[in-house]
Length: 122
Image (cartoon, rainbow, N blue to C red; front, side):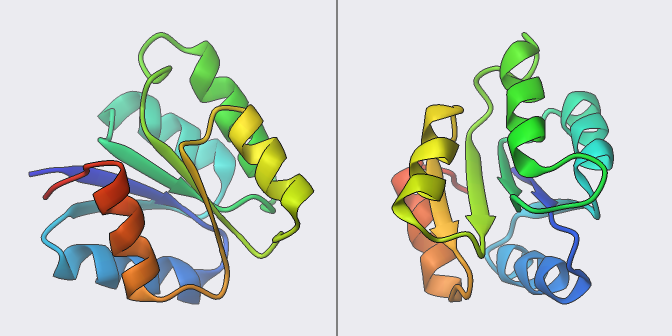
């Protein structure tokens, strides 16, 4: 079963993402901040990481920077999901190595379309 790691500090958003992904038959790991998410990414090596940008302890930019420097996670597909929605925000996320950048609020279809684009299957 394909595992997706969701790193999101907002409880309701994290739960909503988990429900959407589990309905699509994915195994879902969750983390409430970037530091925990980074540990889970290295330990479990998920097929995809969906990560918020603005979080306590370690923000999403710090998460992807660390992941891209680690040989275990350097190529792990990564999607930012953020309320930061300017072109500059999107550009920064993609320049740091994200495969996609989605903005909040999002729909289940937005998430599924991103998975289809990255060819992530359950």
